[in-house]
Length: 303
Image (cartoon, rainbow, N blue to C red; front, side, top):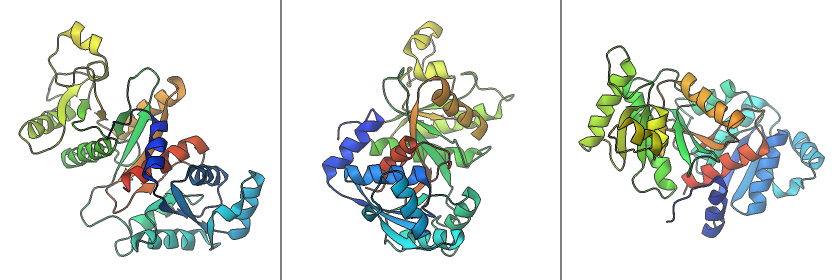
């Protein structure tokens, strides 16, 4: 498989597979979600179950000049009941992907995390990985964790690495370069994350973390800029060519990606990781384009 280096290339890849993934949308009467799902249906890689208030879904579809007949609408007006039905469908293999619509994130995740009927396996770590496209970088960057783990411990950081590597490999990257991001490349007891990073790097070196190259701590320049590596003279197998960036905290990673969106003309697709099936969770204010990329990403991860 040729590596996917742009978000739009996800769509071309999915169209070539000629397979449709079934997506269950919880409380689907959200205009941006309807627009994104309609675009995915038009491109031919999605069949959508829109679970929510039928009349609202139809009305909002028509307001966007979208024919509601392209959707399979399941009429459940109650927010929580609609969400539980969407989760049930994915749990029972009636759908391949779960997506949040207008339902609040807390209510949505409560259903996803339900011990009896949810989608998170026992003892699994839930995290979040984004595939980000930035005009000034020569390929996609996979970054974690932007949304779920506030202050990941060592075990959680290892899970973040594995989830990100798995996503990168789905994009055709055979041996992803993983940079563990800090303020400096020096390991110091004054920066506990640097100790975790040193442990993770050694684990990868000894084959405990597989199918990737890992180094850290590294600052962003050493991770993503070859000229900076030459100037500083730091020896790192990442060599300014990172595929994956792992951040020490949600605040750091979230601020990084939002900075790229706001100032760097970035685009992204992101997914919850650790669940039995792909789960798409985005802010209700996100644009249809961002949601479309998340849908495409979820279809690739469901392959």
